Length: 189
Length: 146
Figure 1: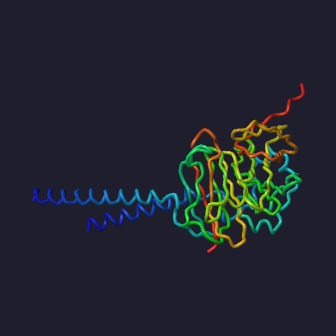
Figure 2: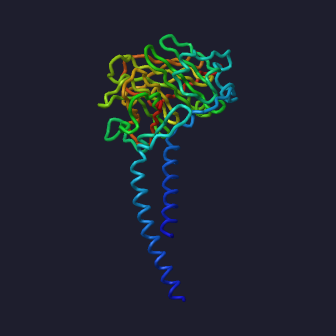
Figure 3: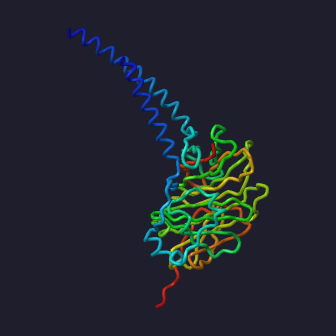
């Protein structure tokens, strides 16, 4: 009986361990019930988000997972080469990017992190067929940033100007962008 | 009476030790499977974690990790990487581990999700460490329709 009891306890422990491991690996950004709230920090620090919003095209949202905040308060980014939106939520800011003939990609970060360090999504060619040969870096940064220095693994940093909280780099580079450094504009004296 | 209690207690203790050892071995075995957790159903279909753990610095050793066959297959919808400590990238590949599309990379402390082409192909998720100097912990996730 003792053995049976211990086996049962053991089984419960094992199930618990397995569940935790999976839970840990599951993205937390996915929400079953999207809300329409937007974090105050996002509005205060990104002028881009204070403008009128534009929902994502229905055809695109069908290709995306549900995200905190939903897709109805997206803000289209002024980019010509690709379609991109900033999607604020109560605690997270997401960036949706869709290249030509490519499925969309989404990156999300805590608003506090985006305010401090900005955020970006980079696409780097992987010598795969039917994909773009360009390296593309699209990002959003908080108010007051005039340009970003893009640091890529094993390559010299690249500067990209910021317009309306948004920066874009499109080139034939092969190095993987790893981080960005925010360059604040000089204040008038 | 005391001897009887003592014997029973000793037997119980020995049984507990043996079972604890069995538990430990079984849990270690489960731990080795943690990199390819069993699928779990949710509102979006099924989801599973893969490649949870350490990845070596970019271009060294095991800097890239491909999802195992048991969480790969047809009807895959999204693949994600959680890059908490260092910058990371995500992609998906065919059964022979050939990448299908461009790497999608993000800085640390973010999570990136890419949509998988709905062309009827058999795909596996792929993640990589993007930092040249440090190894770091990453976790991949993959979703599919039942």
